[in-house]
Image 1 (tube, one colour):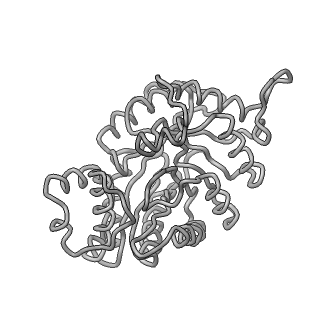
Image 2 (cartoon, helix red, strand yellow; image 1 turned 135 degrees about the horizontal axis):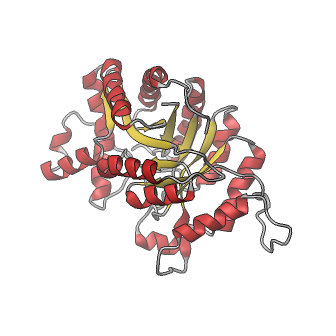
Length: 336
């Protein structure tokens, strides 16, 4: 494993505001850079009372401005919500302001419910245009021919690194076909992780963007001084995910001592399965669990994420994770 990175959804905690969440994101970004995280990604979600990163490119700019060396990017931009030209201009602007530090991860999911998707897009199109939209976006970020009628300014010639994100075999196959780096959303959909990684590696075609396959896997992390405290803190995310699954999204709940008493057994089993690619516990426990994940799946990069209601506890969790991941990172692979 070459690098370890961090995915932040800018969670809005119960009793807090979006302003609190965005302030916490900037503080966490500074801590992440100090602790050796290679990149800091933010995700696009809409109509979510508990997530403050909806205007993803705007937040990326703020994070990049408050840090100095760490890569910052989108994990990801939900491309069906946007015109490729607009995305190229936004990320071309970011790359122009923060050269050599910006990433663009792309997903074909809407990142919201269908009613909100209609509000975002205004005009719903039938069919999946994701492959065509990715190709168009790559052209805008590339060196444009002299006779190009449409140019992304800023954007053209910035060569912002583009990633394909996914949780199924489609993303793996498409990333391999295009010769782009691939990130798997195993932190909430681990079922297809092994098949997707194998498919991507076996069918990868070298391209002008990437000479050999490069994989990232995501894992949840909730680390604390003791196993008991970590399990208690993690209950917030279990509750939030269960409520989202049952159509009741809200702010990040406060932790509870008996999460099984808050979530019906069948629903809790589903949530635990969805979030099984994770490490929860004391530093020693987290070390054992992350070591096992890296050994089993052999990612080129590990991206960790985790929502904890108490901000100080969340900072501490990512500090513990960084100590573990630094030991697992061997620095033997080509930079991406």
